[in-house]
Length: 88
Image (cartoon, rainbow, N blue to C red; front, side):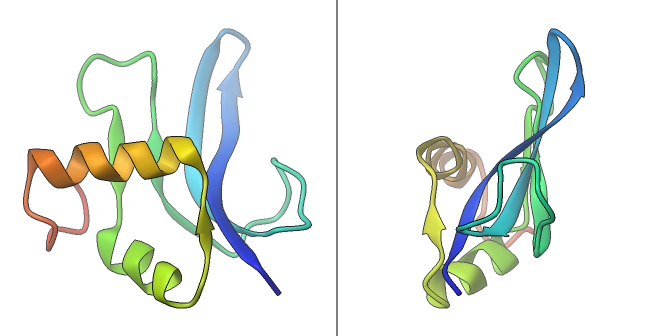
């Protein structure tokens, strides 16, 4: 089974809210997820992202592939604070 770390859309119409999840590569975007790692709120000005780096790194070590937007979110969070924290 190949796993992907990507966004899962939830929220209302015109108020997007995304969860950062680990899915089977064959699952649809909003299908059942293996694990939830955090969230992304593009509309909010503060607290836009949250990501559990410990679990994120664990899934990467298992060979999970990461989508582009999740990779950029992780990069922004690494710049802003210590990596050892589970949430930023």
